[in-house]
Length: 299
Ligand code: CP
Ligand code: NVA
Image (cartoon, rainbow, N blue to C red; front, side, top):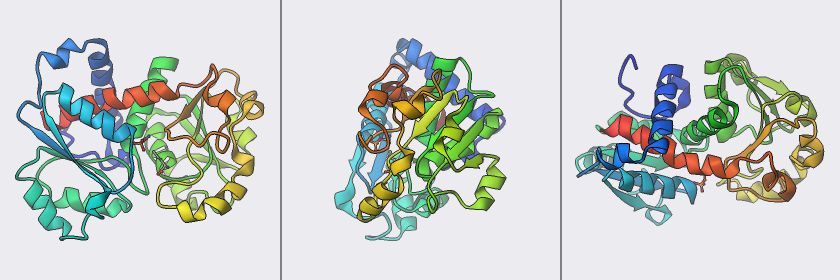
């Protein structure tokens, strides 16, 4: 790495070489647990997890990763209210930096994470915001590399909501010469400016996205914080379900989902439970990718 990465706020500002360094270490630690157990780089260190939204995978994988590296994690959940409500983010960042060695944040507003990183003197990691989910995509890239042998020059089809998970895919894939084809209903697409600057391809019909794809990816139709739109969204996204008929156009592709899945909505049981699905490998790799990330950022 040319410079030491301090935070992980967005994959937009992380280089291909930095992503590769994380993926290489993640793969090495996955193969050889002794390599980190025998040298606990977080010994005596503490990581604060500040989550404004629910979580299974992100919370557990970070807490387990911190424990495996010899550190302590402290979880502050939704009952604490939104970050910046009780006190200014600057005061929280500067106070907590005196105890913590890293912050992991799951927030509504992306700006909350940016603001925390501006004032914290310790690394800040984005554990999902309304705009991005970079840690998810690190694990996904690790999963793709395991399954396809590479992350370069592949074609990924994303069917569904152009939201946080899809945006982080759009940040990462073009760095490796890989293509992202996105099919979203009208009103749920990225702004034209983002499509153009990121180099992704927007198509109208899901079938046009999945043709010749190496990866077929989807996410929930209704993200956390959008619950009051669930009814409308279910109607709008009906033609964007990944089912056997759609997946038959990409017989060699792997099927990916960040989870939690809404079975029967964005994907059918036979797809998520079927032979093309790698969703639990993605979930497992959250642990390996984040353990590697913490090793590089905090140690
Ligand atoms: N994929 C993911 O971030 O899962 P959680 O919401 O359970 O953390
Ligand atoms: N887009 C989803 C991802 C969950 C991991 C959400 O934000 O709720």
